Length: 100
Image (cartoon, rainbow, N blue to C red):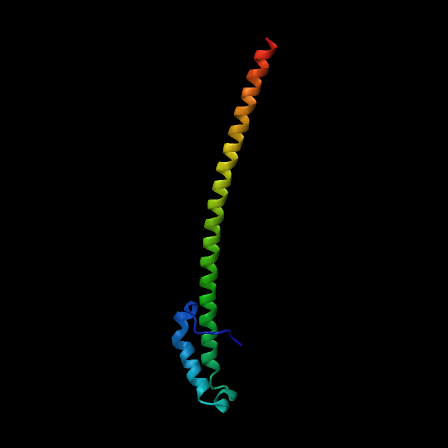
């Protein structure tokens, strides 16, 4: 059983899904003897391909977002290390001046 088929995600499969709807509209006996099975397999193949492409786009977008976030984190770490290094250098200068 499929969820609702006629969605914007499945626009490329619209023609095949309409053919399946028309086949099912011919009546129960027509469906029961397997007259719609070939069309049903085509619908499944098309929907699977669409789902694969959608998942691939989502994965690629997630990778890009992750890369962008990691770059931001790296910049933040550099700033934090720069701040702590500057504070350590200032402390060393202060300690060196006090010992003299």
